[in-house]
Length: 191
Image (cartoon, rainbow, N blue to C red; front, side, top):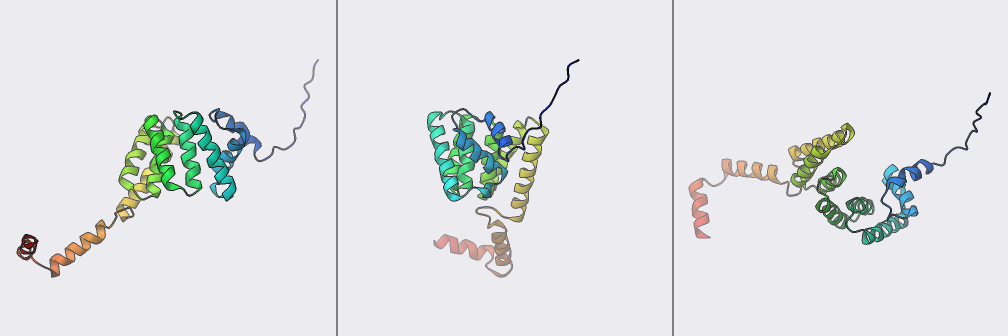
């Protein structure tokens, strides 16, 4: 009769599971960047400024090696967001969506960045597209929650160029107390 013996393994380091999960990253990403990305996913605030800058540089090098891989551009866009470089992140995520329009994560993250930049109409479009591309209930739920946040922002008037409600109130008050239509037409004809 044979007996199986098991040895108790040493407790895993906090990054051991992250490192094993990092194996699914594109091959162009160096190992130190994989660990930093895993840390960034756990908590974006955990990376110090030099670590964020190093991660961005490593991801830029990976994108330079494989410019047609949209997942690399999504990761770079996310790292740029964590590094507070919104304009570059916007460009990278836009390019990721152009390269692979059927990528759930590219559409979702681009929609999220647009939402954070208060460009709600475009954010809603990309989030809706992400919801349509969702391959699992978890992805669908992520897109649904983001879409709900965008709708709330639109309803409350929190968007770029979102002076619509204030202007409506002003026009209403002006209509009550201001010029009538004939006076307005006379002013417009003199311009």
